[in-house]
Amino acid sequence: QVQLVESGGGMVQPGGSLKLTCTSSRSINAMGWYRQAPGKQRELVGASEPGGKTNILDPVKGRFTISRDNAKNTMYLHMNSLKVEDTAVYYCSAEEYGKTYWGEGTLVTVSS
Image (cartoon, rainbow, N blue to C red; front, side, top):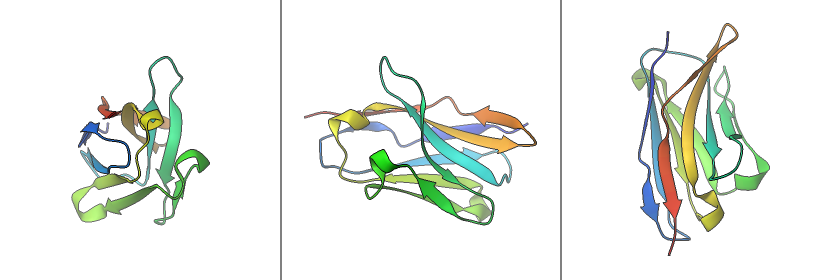
């Protein structure tokens, strides 16, 4: 079992920045960030792969980055130049031996 806890969400104005944190109960290699906007399906934002490589999807590439602190079992999502359309609940996920674990999510609201 893996427990994931997200934090760092909140309200920010367009153009602002936020840093989301996902803390895992233990070390796990494959982790990622998803988001779900109101009325839309959950979508992948980016992933942190075994070996340290990170991958950010096109809609947020150049604005969002992922980093990890393996000593703290923590993954971060650095979000810059936020847009209204980035408003969503952001979820941390982890995969191991074919099983996917989810956090409860943290709400990010981008509004003026």
